[in-house]
Image: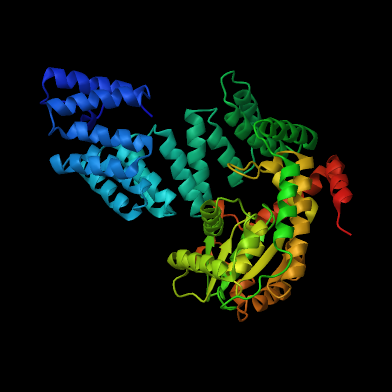
Length: 534
């Protein structure tokens, strides 16, 4: 962002206060900047004794409570400030942040829109609005707000990165690529821009890009997070230079760096799968309503295994709607665990049919905001392969599609991928193969328990005969055949495709790359052979 004088909105905040009160307000501001909340609170309390009707003091008190995570109290204080000075855009902006943190997203957007209308030349306001839109899955609104930000401040790098993310989310990959390139022109070592540009895969990286990435990695003050993002981008750049040995060395190096930052315990993960098989030795009996959950379709999978393609196939059907990476199932089980003061699945043995029905009803209530009037709701989450037993106890009428891919392709695709969060197993080949083995054996357990409710849908079979596999998938989901499902739209009925590249293209490209490495990946093949199921 370009340096310059403070915006008028940020000036004169203490105008009209007596000198003593103004000095205390300045002391509180300095304390907040230094992350000294107790000192800030003490100074603000003294100002309130001198000037109880000062809107700025109430605003700062609300901001302090927001920073502490006490959003209800922050709202009380900020509304007090708003009552005293309703035309103050900064108060509106702070209020919108606390509204959003409290779950009042629509009120938060409206509040921030009012603030931007009050000060249309204030870039941080438009940036916050763009950020809020993007977090709500509204990329079109985000693009408008972020373009306004850049009209005011062309050097606002976070806004340009976020604009590129929003453009990629709408399939505008070339525009996104151009914005990432503009960021790199301004900040050649910007790790997020390099990594996300590599993920777009719009055009091949050049030899010059390799040099620039290597230079950025040598920066003495680069954080570990930046080195990891740059390292994965370098792998892609070296692949584009057709240099398998160098690319594989870079891949092993960056995975080792990331793995050292994590604390993945493969033995603990395997023990959790053991516990799940023991907790669910047979289907739950005695459900009051065996049809509860009819119409819900869970898609489970390992990462990078074609689950998004499976979602797209189903979401292309006019009777279905999808919600991407839904976390409600996990959240409901976590809340039940907290109430019982026992981790899942330890409490499964004491849960009654009524308990499971109650949890299922809670899930159905939560997905109503997405499902609307569609007969079929698609819940895709790559972590839910561990929760199939619970899901079908809660919703005995639901169906589960296990989206599989050939083990080697799946594991190598994970190893090549930098996950912004989660999937900590993927940065070490031994850990990756152990995780795949646990997934495979638990999937076989679910298939044995729920043969009519659990379908194995593998990418390779779909590739060999798309129409036949789609028919089988639709029949399992009790959906009539629709030709749109054979060639699904890129973002049909909620299914999201990053970067505007079809999921089929991504999977084909992954397979081509693994073949390109050839015998260099023999160790991964050997590890998988050692754990192969009979």
